[in-house]
Amino acid sequence: MPLQYILELVGTFFFAISGSLAIQDDHDDLFGAGFLGFVTAIGGGTLRDIMLDSYPLVWIGDINFLYAIFAGVIMAYIFFNRLIGLRRTFVFFDTVGISFFTILGVEKALSLGVRPEIAAIMGMFSAVMGGVIRDVFTKETPVLFRKEIYATACLSGAIVYLLLYRFGVDRNINLLISSTVIFTVRILAIKFKLSLPTFKR
Amino acid sequence: MPLQYILELVGTFFFAISGSLAIQDDHDDLFGAGFLGFVTAIGGGTLRDIMLDSYPLVWIGDINFLYAIFAGVIMAYIFFNRLIGLRRTFVFFDTVGISFFTILGVEKALSLGVRPEIAAIMGMFSAVMGGVIRDVFTKETPVLFRKEIYATACLSGAIVYLLLYRFGVDRNINLLISSTVIFTVRILAIKFKLSLPTFKR
Amino acid sequence: MPLQYILELVGTFFFAISGSLAIQDDHDDLFGAGFLGFVTAIGGGTLRDIMLDSYPLVWIGDINFLYAIFAGVIMAYIFFNRLIGLRRTFVFFDTVGISFFTILGVEKALSLGVRPEIAAIMGMFSAVMGGVIRDVFTKETPVLFRKEIYATACLSGAIVYLLLYRFGVDRNINLLISSTVIFTVRILAIKFKLSLPTFKR
Image (cartoon, rainbow over all chains, first blue to last red; front, side):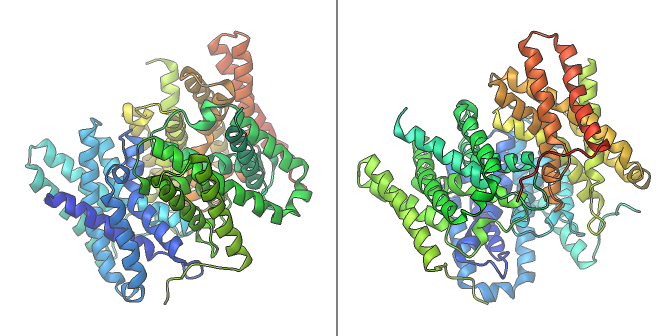
């Protein structure tokens, strides 16, 4: 198995954990948590592939993704109390995850022949829409509308990828650089509480 | 018309009634109720078919489903007060509906060549996602996250179907047995207030 | 560029503005507003095209729609305070937009070979589902469930279009008449506070 494939499964596993942990206090059975983990893990890629008419959906064509999700949900169930205490660690994993999935989403969209502007949006969608759907289900304010840099970081990294791609930079180097951009932008934004300009009233 | 087709139309009719009855006190015009009935009735099957790239969607390819929905909405409008008092009866019909549609969803997914694990998920989606979308629109906590056994019952029945299918049990007998499993699990869970293990804190 | 194409881009531009202005006071960064403008502008047509299996999606196949959205978001950002004060004007533009997009949606569905009843629903979806998705994201009661005539107006105009189409009325005249029906129904409903019969309790 090539490294990229392993990373995709690991990323899916972590998304499923973080989705499961979003279960609310007052509605928290195992199935509900599993369902949340599932939609968080598959939501973004599924929406991207439906919009691009790319079938079969990744998790339907390759059963290992489903197993990675099951593993994540079970892990979340067994180690719930310990994991909840590790929220900071999760921000770290979540950020690694969105950094990586954004660029994979951009690449998939490009490979299907869409324009770079559309590929950037599809990359961002791949990474964040799972979390948005999770937030709608748990009646949280969707992560996109909270005052922190999240989807914006994904979009910046996607644009960096597309620029370097244009200039012919080697694909693996480009993946590394542009993922790092996303990771760095988001972590710096959290650390220094950076946010985008607001709509002034 | 074969029995199964009639049952599908009847199930759609009942889903449309129960969706319409979900209209909220403070926002309750006829159109809103009709729209809720409509999404409740078509939501699950539509999502399943889009994910499986199976076109045309059932209700687009066969207009009788739309007529069944209209009939349900009008029925809900005319007999609203009486039907609201019959909520218990509706739990019965809703349970019959999800039991039946889960298995039909599993069969459709299998016929499109996906693996059994995926077919089980698709069966459950067919039955419950209409209600989930309805709950998102009415700002209710989605039925999946309430402390009662609902989607879990569907998933159990789907798994029973797949096991019996594997062992070569006749299709109609299998449909009957596995639908009955779903029905029984849900009704017993309601009667004895059973719920799944929760995430302990 | 033919007039219709220009009108589609202008309509998309206005939808993006009205979507961006829906950003909430407490969660109002530029990106969130842009995302809202984006989903409001593309949501309805995207859902229609996915349900009808019509690819590429309009905004993926023609980049000008994305540029129209960007222009709308930036416009909303720069003139936010002035535009918020123009809400009445926006009801006007929004009504023009839904009137026009409903009929275009009906025509697209018909051209893909579906029955008139389905085409009417698809026309209405094209016009209103972007706003419904926007309302779900901002945790507003979806526009369809508010006590004002909105989607109903779209549906009436769609039915008028289909009747005139049946009687062989010239397409441009039909577009003009049926859009005007939608516009008039909605504006009169607002002016005279008309609403549909409610579910009586």
